[in-house]
Amino acid sequence: MNIYFSGIGGVGIGPLAEIALDAGYDIVGSDPVESLITKELRKKNITICNNQDGEFLKGYHAQKPLDWFIYTAALPSDHPELVMARELGIKTGKRDELLAYIIERKNLKLIACAGTHGKTTTSGMLVWTMQQLGIPVSYSVGTTLSFGPSGKFVPGSEYFVYECDEFDRNFLHYKPYLSLISSIDYDHPDTYPTKNDYLAAFYQFAKNSNHTISWDDQHAELFNDLQNIHILSTTDVNPQLTLAGIHNRRNATLVQTGLKQTGFNQSTDEIINQFPGTDRRFEKLANNLYSDYGHHPVEIAATLQLARELSDHVVLIYQPHQNIRQHEIKDQYTNQFKSAEAIYWLPTYLSREDPNLAILKPIELIQNITNKNDIIIADFNQDLWNIIQQSLNENKLVLCMGAGEIDGWIRNKLNESIE
Image (cartoon, rainbow, N blue to C red; front, side, top):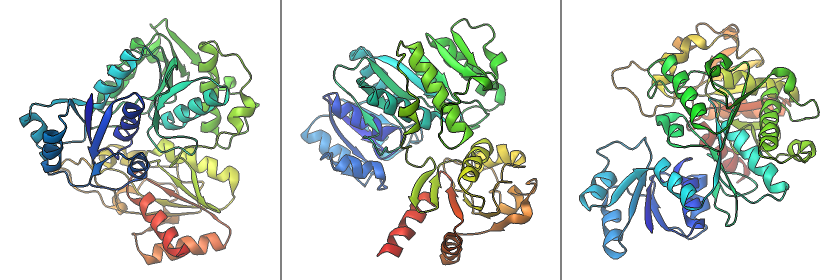
């Protein structure tokens, strides 16, 4: 089967392309932006076009007919490649359709890691632990990993670990063997208009699973009538875990409980305590300089708590993500920033926006923050880079947080300083 991936550098599509390649399918794709994932894929001699006007797809199809055009939910219905694929009569589908197809065809047991926050770390930690235990495992994690590719199909594996995203109701397309829910906080208002819609989706996700493990402080009452769920309490957090960050110790406990549920009873404390982490989740870029994907108030508080375990002086560079999301969470920005002694607040990264919503300015987002006197409105410029360098010279921990261009900006600045 010959598969075309539109947006092949994305955190959802990229790992899936690698899995399809490992599973024996021919793949090709496009992405207008170079990323860590496109670089990873090019190393495997995968053809990637940076132009998405549809002409490359048309020419490729003429030479080697395509069987399936896979695209992300973020792709608009009038996107040139999607329009071209339909005109050419190529079967089209979203990523969950192809992944479900592969899981079924390869007879794999799906372990789905879901949650508003923590699903990337939990899925990465589970893959790492299973690998160290010598358990063959196929997987898809929505970021690049230091210990393997983002997605991998392992012939002969029994399990498939999947970072199961709730955006676009993606996680409702599966029937997991086991589901791990790391957290539940209202998010993705563009998919779920109300909090009740969001909670109802998690309920359906748990119901679709053979067995589910979650936490008692994550809307446990939501699952009261389900018989297939195991609820963990705060006292269940393994005291032998030494990972920095309360949320990481919770994620690790979830992983250990999930492994026991599947019949693996070996001690894993030492293995998990050595977990190298995943990219963009408190990823160390240089001494005292970290990058993190967090962009929700709960994630911000958890990551800053982790940072304070490592340093008494934390400087945060924060870029909010999506204007539509800021309209939903602006009143939730309150005491999450108290662990930072200085916060540099950047303009919101815009993506998949409602054109009818006014763009919220930084000054409008910080009004309810308890330590807003510690906030400085900033921008991506040399002044900000100078502040970061000065903070590092003073032995302060600098945390760059956001799901937009902040990660690429800080990496480029680092590279420039090395050159």
